[in-house]
Length: 341
Image (cartoon, rainbow, N blue to C red; front, top):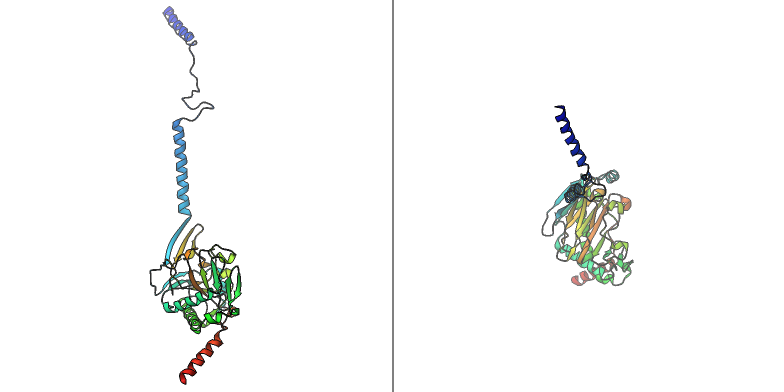
């Protein structure tokens, strides 16, 4: 038994010794992909790419759900609006300042638009007035202004006083002037009605002006009308801003929409659009609740009037006293005498 057992053990030993002559399999083979300095396998490469695509997808989802800009049309060119309003919370600096002026504090801050305040005929007369004025001067860039109160008129890269030009008396008629004043009064009343103000607490303020916008290349900072801004920060006198559009979006010009920028939290915002339409009036409180800009005009000519109001008598200005008023009165007197005769 012991001899048999010894033979068995001997054979195992011999087998073991014989196995020592066979080459050992490497622990680090290229097929395993775990060897030092070896390249990833095809399967591992696919896995890496899958992870990368997943990470990019997650990042895109986070971005588009966190940083969003929505668009909303407040007034389209095709609509005929009796009145459309949007109440807003007043910005704190605006509310703190305007609270000093009794009778001029809005029930709510916000904005409105209406196609029923000014008639198309009145807008047509004012458009004729604007075109006549801009015949005497235009900006070398894309934005020209005509201020009938101060007489400021864009010309090249500077401003001139339109009332120093003899041609002004021939271009501006008494009808133009009367309609301008009448329209201003109607817009002032609309502001008072919509924000529940005492109309006598509102005062016309500087600047109030016609604007002519084209797709011309900007030559000075005054031509860059498309930057977002807050009127109260740009013009300290402003408390309420209105615009009267004299030409039609999509017909007389392309681009040039008026855009409110409503920020909603840190990352979200909504762009609220007004498409200009002849005789359309828009109005809004001039504080930070109504940040806005005008899109760049891409073709045609966009005409409008900015009519601004203040609650502070210190910044109030009277209706324009045109140099041609006396001449207009003389003409009317002559016509009356001729009729009487």
